[in-house]
Image: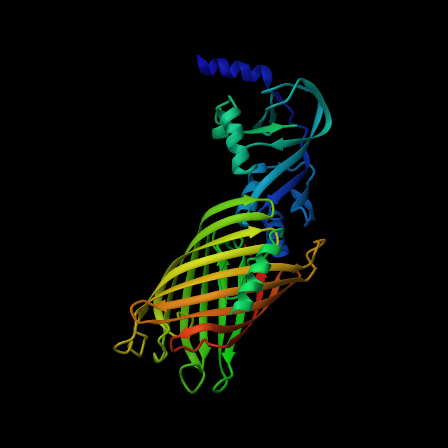
Length: 172
Length: 266
């Protein structure tokens, strides 16, 4: 019964935006100082087939990533590549193209079978490119994650899974 | 000695704003990137009483985000009249702690080393870098504060008989080793691209003791490092004892090393 309720709730609140996609992302990596470390991280990221180009701001450890058109973006793979280079994601702001979507707190949207859940947002309509900040584990510093885990009333924040599919928690 | 300590203290206090942890004489707690390969060619030696030198070929590989392994081969005329192939060693480092924030991190790693060497044993120092067969296990912590990196390690070494020569009677079979390292990124002041040459300064203190035998040393090892194209690294170091009460080769030694890194080989 509970499952049914969640399912109905999902049907009501989730809108599939299959045609829209992520266009770019601003990734800040922590733990980096030497250019050799940044170089290793960038080469690691470039292995991902949905990444088109990367520009770096070495002073701020920022990677400005442009995604390939029509390629399916997987944010978890970005975080994994940063970690395999030996570092951590400090922040990831990914730009998504919305088309007149009304959002509110805990509103979900679906992108290629993956759910994105809005946390800490007021009611507003999103149209055009909007940068969403990912709040999940391995996308924010451990302290920030703990803070949100204590605050968030949705259990899927800790598991990252909702009804068997990956759910990211984002804010704007 | 006093001057060096003062210099070190000034260095640490002046540079808390900003660092480098690609130490020349020790390893940091951080690992290489996964699937990256580092190739090192190194020459170390001394000129008194006569010129002796050792060449090392070392390959380093990032096996996972937490594990890296090194393999080294040694050749020298340190312990014999002619230069010869001495044997090899394998080193592994496992990072168990990472506290990262932007341009700052604190890391901890366990490391272990095994070496098989065919030299005669003439030194009191147990050194797995070409002189002795043995095993080593230890822990290292590294703190990065923007351009300054500080690191400390402690380890235990157990010497075995070398492949042809036994440890002489009355020689220590166990040693304790420690190190303290500071590294500072001097140039570039501002990063704009990967082609900028980096200049890093290092100051390291290296110590070893044979417990129960009253044998030990503390060495100071200043070093300069250049990094080209964010890929090629050149190290120069000079190592001299601050205090020594141990028969060994490694007094007043120079070190020259070139390291080339290939990122993401698979």
